[in-house]
Length: 442
Image (cartoon, rainbow, N blue to C red; front, side, top):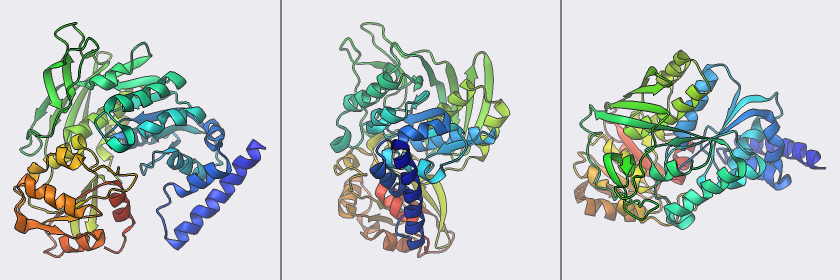
C-alpha cells in the first residue's frame, strides 16, 4: 500500500507542478513536495533509495551557497547529483526536488540543504551519510529561539542519523557538535583583506560565548561575529586544529583560498565577494577533498561557479546591472552590508511573513550604519518598508535619500529610472526575494 501511495504521489505532484507552471501562479519550489507528502507522508523514505550518498548541509547562513558549490564540484566530476538548488530547505522543498526528478536511475549524490529546525525531521525518513554545518548565528528568534535551541535541533539530528560530520572549527557552537562523533574540521588560519570595502569593521553586536566551565571565551583572532581562534583562559579549552587548514585573501570581487589537507596545498580562486562566501566555499572544498575529488575539477568548478537565487546573484533590471543579496539576520546582513556599492541605487525589501520570521528586531542589530554615506537613493520596500526607513534614519542615512515604496515591483522600477550605467543593489528578505525572482517583466 505504501508504494502505491508513493507512485500516486509522484504522478499527481508532477501533474500539479506542470499545472501551476502553465498558470504561472508559483515558482514551484515546494508545492509539488507539499502535495507528495500529503498523499504519502513517508514519501521521503521511499526516495532515499534513489541516492547512493546523501550529503546534508545546515547552519544559519551559507547553506545555499555551500551546497550549490559542492553540487557544482560533483557535477563537474560527472556525478549524477540531485540538489535543492533554489534553497527550499524544509521537508516540502526537499520532497519537491525528488517528486520532480523521480523515477530515475539512482543519483550518485543527493546534496540537500536543510533548515536547522527540520534536520532532525528529515533524518526520520532520509538519514544522511554526511553533514556539513556552516555556522550558528542568532536568527529568527520567533521560530528558533536562542542559539542553544538551534544547536539542540542539529544535535538531535546528529544523534539520530550519526552522519560523518564536516564542521566549521572557527565557530565554537558548531565545533562542539563533533564531541564524541566522527568529525572533520575546516577553518581559516589567517585572513588578509585587499579591499577597502570588505575590511571595514562591523558594529553589529557579537554574541558572547561561554566555555563549558562557565568562563567567557577569548580570541587570538576574530574574523567576524564569533568566527575565529577562541580559547578559554580558565580551563584550556580552545579551537580544534582543522583537518582542512585554510588561508584567505579577500579582494573586492573575488577571493583566493589556499587549503592544506594531508600535507598537500591547494590554491583556489572564488568569484564571490566577502569572507562569508570564502567560508562557504571552504566547507564545500573540504567535503570534496574528503571524497578525493581531483584538484583540477574542484578548481575549475569554483572558478566557473555563479551564485543563484539571491546569494550574490547578478541580474538585469530594466537594463541596469543589479546585484541581489539576501539578508535575514544580524550577522549575515552586516557582512553583506560591508560589500554594498554605495554608488548604486539601493533597494531594501523587508517582509515579515512566516518564512522571514515575524520578529524584525534583527534590523536594529544589523550594521545599516554602513549605508550612511550612500550617494544615491535608498528605497525601502515590502511589508515592513516603513520600519526599515526608520532604521535607516537612525543609521545616519540622509533623510532626503530615503524613499518608501511598499510595492516591491514599483520600488525596483524607481531604482531603475536613471541612466543605464547606474547599478542597483537589492537587499531582500526571503519572501521578498521569492517575489523578485518571479518578476520577469522588469
